[in-house]
Image (cartoon, rainbow, N blue to C red):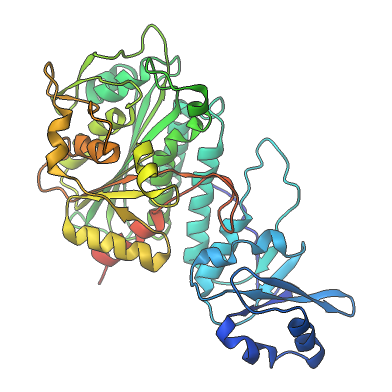
Length: 459
């Protein structure tokens, strides 16, 4: 999962041209073509609208292509090209687009998960030099997609922990791995969730420092929910509800992708990453409804629902991370269906306890075309987590504001004065669209990266 081969070759490679067109510049572009080609494009009704492709004939077959960008600057505008262009090598002619965005979108559209089924065809190849940032981000997103798409019988808690350890080792990070008695002592809620599975729960913590970072450099801590399969536990999901539950480790996969982007870019920061790797299963050892768990923070939690296990996986990680006093703490999780009901599948719900970071993250989402949507940490709902027998319940008895209540639960474990952002994401594409093949997805990570660069890495 470290060596994905992107469909890119050196710019000097023999290739056919793709000419990009925006509607407002259609006539100017057609004016640069040979008269016969321009006449062909007009006769075909080519207009330059988004995702419009016209293959242009030549004496020996297809000689070039016109590709419409519409008015969007999103990288996804280039996402359909790898499988709509005929096989072979192509190059993007100079035009009204950003090269990094184009390369990123092309690579995101080229991805397919082929571990168990051969692809129907290979994507077209793009001849290009440079765009190092786009290449790095594409490789990280491919890694996240591979992890999420892997079936649970192949990627369990140990294998997910292995992937995190390998990533840290690749970039020279210090890595600590906890399991067994160490897990029980340091991360009791992670251990409680994982106890029902025959596959042992693990927590991996890595610590890395950029080449230009010092002891006083900004410190970012990332935490990821890594539930490799979620049956719901004793509060068993219906069969339809389990069909995508291999993706319940999508938060961990996204965190690892973001960590990879940061380390590959050698940002001048200190980075820590925590991943809780578990499986939520049913057995005689599994946690039960109305069990009471003592957390790392010392707070007690009554289990109101065993299917609300993700917040239990995260709460100990957040306690450890926030006690270290990072400049920014970010957690990612496929946490609630309520977030999807509220804002749909295409963007993470963002909960932030700091207004400046909220503005930075939302602005970065817009500038990178990697959107986030803020929901409130509404204090009025905090009492919904009250329990008569423990410090709190892990769920509310009210059937409303589920994503908000989950965020409020997590907030109780974040140390005071810690700048904290919680991303509740779907981490999945239900159908293939340009740049977004069906299956696992990285969401919001390019936005978080851009916000970190702008806030913590500016000269």
